[in-house]
Length: 291
Image (tube, rainbow, N blue to C red; front, side, top):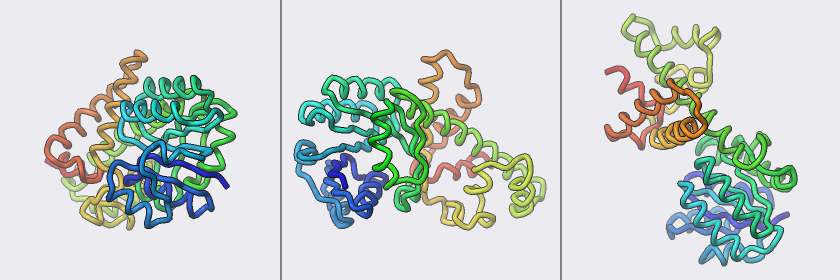
């Protein structure tokens, strides 16, 4: 089993590191928050006092951080201290350009690297059922796959450097657009006198079916595990959906791609966030659309 340094132990990173421990790996964790580090320690993660302390003796380093600037800052520190051949895996959701710069930092230090953002939310992180979208060399992917399998159920090699981030933002743009469409349909159904269950029974088994209906229906009742049944306590917060939609728009602008629905989804989630709902589940946007 591997000795793995894990940098960033928040809502996603903490459970992921805990699953590495459950799989028999040694996980040495570091986070700027003492409280978060304490929680991770309770799940079996060995606490480190610094990034340098965390990576001492580690074969692999996993980072889970909020933004591209954070990843580049941490990786800049990693490559100055990690031994040649160390595998660096970034599981953050960041912009493609920053991901590629991180790969360049790793290559300059003779380290293997992979950008491997995740899908599945906090529930998937805890259950070890995440989907990983990986970008990097065949060698890096082969080295990382057994480690990623301890934290997820589906591991996809999407291509070269930055391809994992590209897949993630494309996927989440689809999700943001589809959730708005589903919310609009249920809001319209309410106005037309349809029960939530009736619309679900039709749409979930016909041409309207999608993950946003079948797995994450944005109204209480039809899907027992939906956040709608728990006052939209977030499995995936609206602020995080907005972040991903903005990343998709930045990528579309850079690539010269037309994404009018993605742009509209970004504007709607931006409005929802500005109304003070960024901490609620993203499916709660149905409440704004009803108005």
